[in-house]
Image (tube, rainbow, N blue to C red; front, side):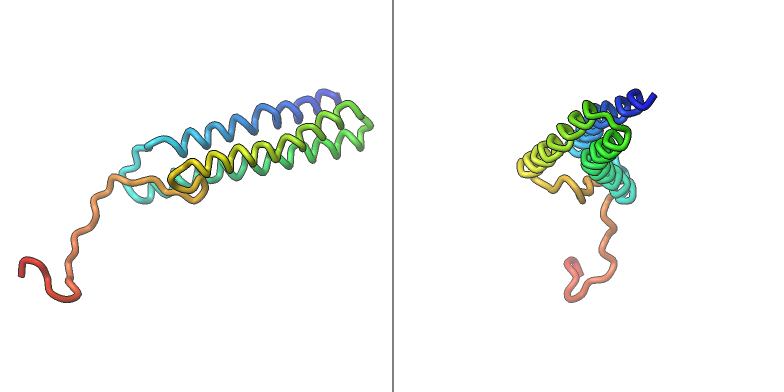
Length: 130
């Protein structure tokens, strides 16, 4: 049972983290239909959460697996989790490379909304048109 648990943890990190990262990049590169500014902020916040979750899981899942494999006395799984911990910085490099080619930041970006700007009701100085 302990080997199965370590296997689930390992493969969740190996396949789950890149999946979350790919979903976040696709969301970031897409042009969502956001009729209001609040919807655009919510879309951007969800994308940011996916980025942060995937990068955190890239470190936390292998570290937890390494700890558990050491406690349970599984040296084979410990080597696998060490390899996954070594691969985590590669995901950071990929994310940084994607961010350097983007015209806007990957995290903290709010897409454009379709809401029309509110008309100016008061002019500070001379109003155009009288």
